[in-house]
Image (cartoon, rainbow, N blue to C red; front, top):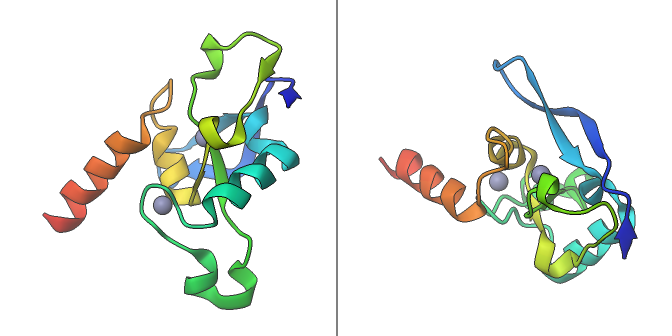
Length: 120
Ligand SMILES: [Zn+2]
Ligand SMILES: [Zn+2]
């Protein structure tokens, strides 16, 4: 699917205490791309495994952010997004952490950090 890769600020996606808003791109906001991604991967965070329905019950059902893996700046303006190849479901905490660097850090790197600090 072709999506206008305009960058959009997402209210509510921010790093607590950092007083910094996080910008995600249109692929992460596109409902069809998002649906195709969660149809394939489900609703578990690709970084920490958190599942909102398991944690909060009914109100958490279907809740997850979707993260676009490619650096948006490197992609041309008409870009075919492959929701399975290019997108991953992530919880808002991990999503905010992924976007603390620009371009966003890899899921593998954030997983390593999470492991390092939660098991340490
Ligand atoms: Zn997570
Ligand atoms: Zn993202």
